Length: 92
Image 1 (cartoon, one colour):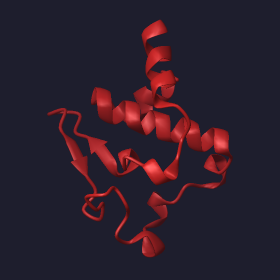
Image 2 (cartoon, one colour):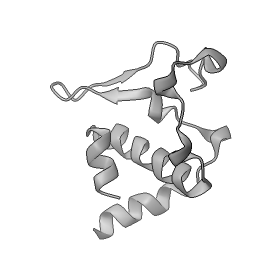
Image 3 (cartoon, helix red, strand yellow):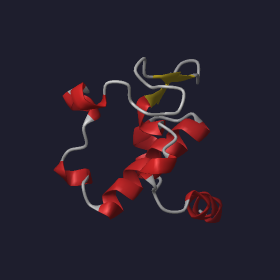
C-alpha cells in the first residue's frame, strides 16, 4: 500500500493543461497494449472535443475537483500499470 501512496503523491494535483490523455487510452486485457483514441492528438488534446460522444463526457458525479483528481489518477494508473480502469479505481 505504501508503494501506491508514493505513486499517487508523484501524480500531484490534476492540471488539465498538463493532461496526459490517459482517459482517452484503453488497456487491451489480452495483450496489455495501450490503445489511443483515434481522435486524441499528439499533444493529448481531443480533436473533436465540442462534438465528443456522450461516453467521453464526465457525468455530474465527476465534476467536483476531488472527483476529477480521482478520475485522472485512476486513468493514469491504468495506463502506467496496463490494468483495467476498474482495477485502478478499486485500488485508490
